[in-house]
Length: 351
Image (cartoon, rainbow, N blue to C red; front, side):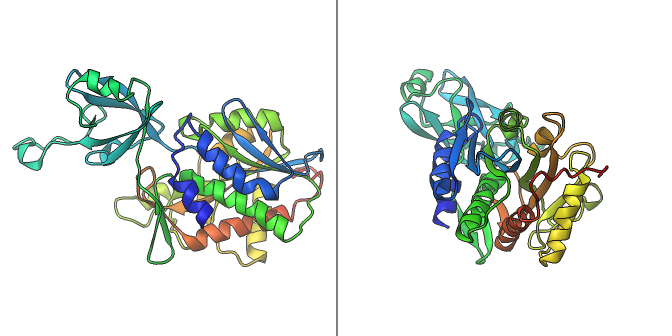
């Protein structure tokens, strides 16, 4: 839990994941044989690096954020997205602006209710939200070290609600990094010897198009990839289950059905869940999964890939919420599935 809290509380915005990766690698170090890192910051712990057959378990390390885009003469800051940041939640949120001089604190300002509209309420938009860091001129802002291109994150930290609900920003998807690290820990502590090379991958830049996974899969050239990410808990208000599916936190990991998920590998994971009495849910994802699964599946001439997701409430907000038991069951399902994979398993339709 100490690792999880430190890892979640650390800021790792897209393109600036390195500090979070150092925390993750330091935790993983006792459980792997070696590490691989790449130019943009993806980190990989490797077990049995000499084995020719390679299996990946993967999550992504980055979180959504903002960029400083324009500073007014009055010292107010306008922003653009870095990933899928939600402008609707921004008004009145505190922020950290990351500069070479350190963190500069600020707030997303918003007009008081007394002054807004007087007849027609104006909502938050990407072009009308702004940050106030207590300065009155552009020069004053720049003297703090703030400039166009500085990245901005929210400071909201980890907490537990009602004993078993984890709440934080960036659970999407640093919880994935936590879960795959726990799989590696269990393998080591239970003295399991795998007949293949296992690559525990924490990739970067998923939030802007799966870019880290696209790069690292070419480096590893895996035979199999089991990806973990988050998906929507659809049991809260204002979500249409006919469109988004019927998924709920506390009911277990979510196994994806999509063209990118290789059917035989997926069914092996389903069978594993049934055999070990791990509760699970199913989700159909149509053309794409929208996760790093897509990047692995269609790389290197085709990689047998599967997606095991963690149901999450309030995605891309600062109060993302997951159930402790789901986290534990995702870890267990990945762990038990790895023990089913044989050396040189082809997952072929044409055996």
